[in-house]
Amino acid sequence: MKLAVPAMVAWYFSERTLPPKLTDVIAALLLLGIPAMLIGLQPDLGTAILIAASGLVVLFMAGLSWRLIAVAVIIVVTAAPLMYFFVMHDYQRNRVDTFLNPKPTPGDRLEHHPVENRHRLRRRQRQGLARRHPIAARLPAGIVHRLHSRGTQ
Image (cartoon, rainbow, N blue to C red; front, top):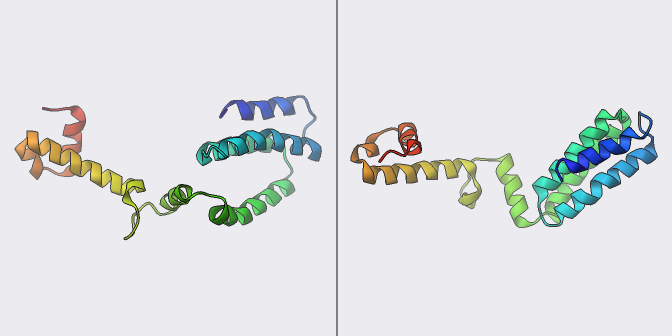
């Protein structure tokens, strides 16, 4: 789907005159919107956004008017907060929050924070390596990470 939908939009525009007319743009948006919406209902928000964005790049390359692009940007900017509060599920909002603020704050669920996960992984690697190699407990975390990734015993 990630490749097929933008390719379908490109095929659609290969048969038409460029720059696209408004009716062609609406038809292309339907070709993009239906699969993206169905994927978003699964709910796989990341793939839906990726498919929609790649199809919009094809529209841009087809010579879409800058006025239409400006209108679309305004619509997206105004719709994003509404989607955040009224459409997204809790776990999707949590992922957006983590993307915008990767460092955990007190009270956050830490399993979704990449910074905390990295520290937690290094602590576990260091503890496991220290059981096998007592000197590893005193080494810097970067060296412990390299030793662990080599699979030393």
